[in-house]
Amino acid sequence: MATVIDGKEVAGSVIAAVKAASEVLLKENGVKTGLAVVIVGNDPASHAYVSSKSRMAKECGFTSVQHTLSQDTSQEELAALVSTLNADPALHGILVQLPLPRHLNSEPIIQSILPEKDVDGLHVVNAGKLATGDLEGGLVSCTPAGSMVFVRRVHGDDLSGLNAVVIGRSNLFGKPMAQLLLAANATVTIAHSRTRDLAAVCRNADILVAAVGRAEMVKADWVKPGATVIDVGINRIAAPEKGEGKTRMVGDVAFAECAAVAGVITPVPGGVGPMTIAMLMANTVIAAYRKAGRKAPKF
Ligand code: GUN
Image (cartoon, rainbow, N blue to C red):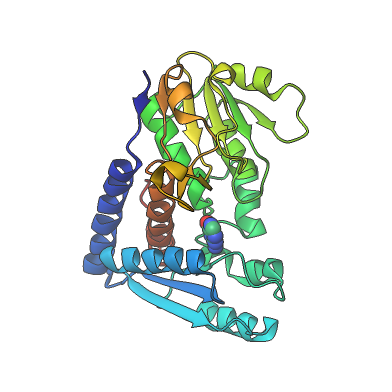
């Protein structure tokens, strides 16, 4: 039976370090770390995520600003808000919650956030810094950064000689995750929906990271015995055992059967999920340290 990583516990230790870092910055430089979160429209899941981000920012001792815009906000209005937040010296991080309503074009909005305030790590400058191996200068997307904290806890900082397979090639997760693993010297394969014999590719992985958005797709016979399995999926499936119409959350990995083969595995919920918010807080305090001309802490 694999060791199951407790994401809440690891996220708690990151949050404690962020709080300590923000206190030091306030005491020694008189700078209060600031985060602005922008949400457009009425999507209940997005509102839940954004509330927990704003709440956690307060808990970390940050100035926490939330802008809730109506469903019919125009592209120009949203762009004007980002421009105001860019110019506000009290704000070190800006996050525009995705997805935006369908009539809005998210890409120009994301690219209009100043790279040094882009705590989501989605600006091309930050993606480019990561791709060129500049891990010190940019900001790294929160979910891959959080997944990497788990990988480092299991394998240390140097992944030389280890095969890593990332299933999924999105800009938000798969590509930055692969870059982080590569920067740590792993031999990295990015697999996706067009990969031939995905199971065989995955069986070669010492570190297997699944981010495909398909419930319980990764089966036990895809997992190399003793491998580290990181499950980034969040899928809702029917759970008739809980009552009619009820659902439960599962990852992209068939947890019980894979846990019998893996060495280390992350659960869903309670694995990668809590790390995403923790790394958002980490990125915000990193941005604040840099703005104050100080070397940023590592998380
Ligand atoms: N929506 C779901 N995940 C994310 C995220 O990491 N960042 C933003 N901005 N929106 C999201």
